[in-house]
Image: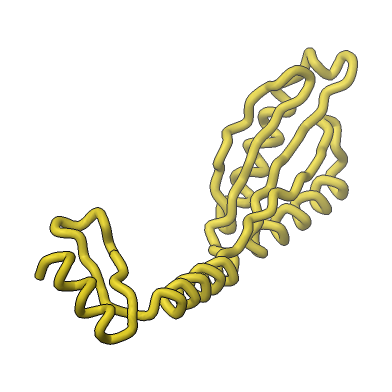
Length: 144
């Protein structure tokens, strides 16, 4: 059917000729009420936005000389964040002469990765940025 025939058909029905998928070959057109079509498209888009979940990035800050109990508290928080489907950014800050012992920091972060491997995976491996080491872990559980 040609475009002229489609327009004539739409006018007779009191509706509009709407190009549904312009990229197709040949382009697909439908005879329908354009206002209603736009409304339905908006509803679909808003429904998709409702179902879409944002992933928050939670931060856990530690120091290389962290004591065992403090470490366990930070691990518990990081585990909780990962189980909730959020990402966890672990920041280890060095002060003064601690910079000479960066290996302690990297070993501590490796230990964290191993202990959290059941609930998360590494997005950004530990790397030095100035006076701190940054690492990002993401959840293997999708947030619902």
